[in-house]
Amino acid sequence: MSESSVMTETVSTIYLVCCFAIPVLYLILYSFLTKKSKKKNFAKALGIAICLMIILFSVKLVLRLNIAIFDYPNCYINNICSNDVDDENETPKKNNKDKTSATNSTSSTNTTSSTTPKKVNPNAKVYDNVKENRGTKTDKGRTAKGYEIYEIDGVTYVDGFLIANKTYFLPESYAPTNTYNKANPKATQTCNNCIEKEVWDAYQDMKADATAVGLNIYISSGFRSYVVQNTLYNRYVEREGGGETGKAKADRYSARPGSSEHQTGLCYDLNTIDDSFANTAEGKWVNQNAHKYGFIIRYPKGKESETGYMYESWHLRYVGTELAEKLYNDGNWISMEEYFGITSKYEE
Image (cartoon, rainbow, N blue to C red):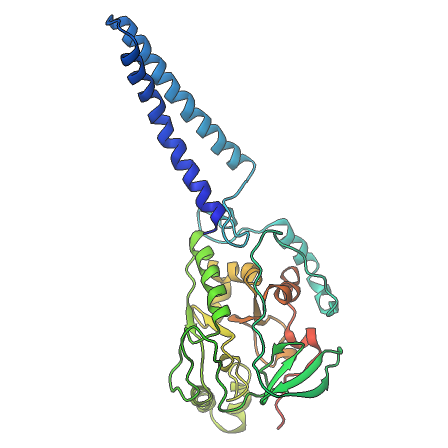
């Protein structure tokens, strides 16, 4: 919860205390200052005290009704408000911007890197991109849209953003170093909080705001080492029948070792890793608000030809609020591949 929200709650509590305290203080002062003991005088003072209490409560009630009538919300860290969720079924409400973006969805494919980010809230917290690793920088040319490509110790960056996909692989020994919990490059298990500190902090803010509007989000899969991804991928290939057919099917939803974003420490999967997540209250809220914390839906709906992966509503990647706002594109998500002009295809 933000500072302003805490302040609002504090003021509200103080006001309620005053509703009782002021009439009581009036009676005490009346008894102390007057020497008269006639019952009718005390009864008159008691009546005035009760009237004071009623007036004070009425003012509070009128203010609350005014807030409800004019839809003035209680907002938290990044302009996430309590009226963004329907009280009856706890599903996110549609706003006018959502309706506008729906009518313009067909034009999203024409959006380029020149898309201008729109400020959701000028006072919202800004999340910066994670700084690139230190090391020897090797120039690798330019993307189709003119962005600089370079490597630092075998890790590919485009315009300062780490890229791991079917075209750009990570070294087998790679693991993020500035993490909330230490990431082991040889780990044989997934570590949900072994992700970059900036990513972890932004996730905590998002989780707090989701909780404030009655939703429950949690990380179900965070950092995965090359070893873990190798095990997972091979398991999926076998499950899909093995051989080239099994690989082709598994490649739509599972990354080959070295090409997984989970090895970067910049992403995580939320809640249920299933198509059903997109239709839950949590899934809808995340889709509409993740960009405010620097996260993107890494594999948007209808972008499989660009990303190489089917739609994953639960897979969030951290890029910072500046780029996230551009890729959000008023709800018509743009993929990183489309934005930067890069490919995501395995070399067979």
